[in-house]
Length: 139
Figure (cartoon, rainbow, N blue to C red):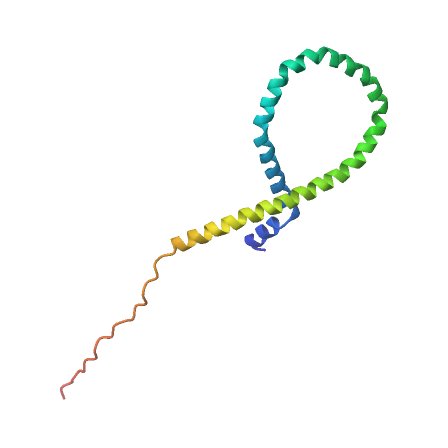
């Protein structure tokens, strides 16, 4: 198979689109991060006041969690596989949109660039024939 065929096969696969979708999702969330950090910093003093009380409450609840853990783990494992499939499908759909949008823009850019880069077309050159000269031979 040629390299172009291999690349085309790769770029038309669902895992390729899922990775592109995951990357787009990561970029979206990273853009939201500065706002979230500011919001959390403003709540920092409020949260530190309640910290000792919250620690005691969590310690009391820890024993109950330990008893329920095996059953909850089985339940979450079943839900996790379903959710992973959903997320994979969502990322693939999102990636397909991103790639088609990007490749559409790239195709337009390449078309513009190729038109600008084309050398000027030269006029066809027709060879100029020299007039025939007749030779005379002396007898």
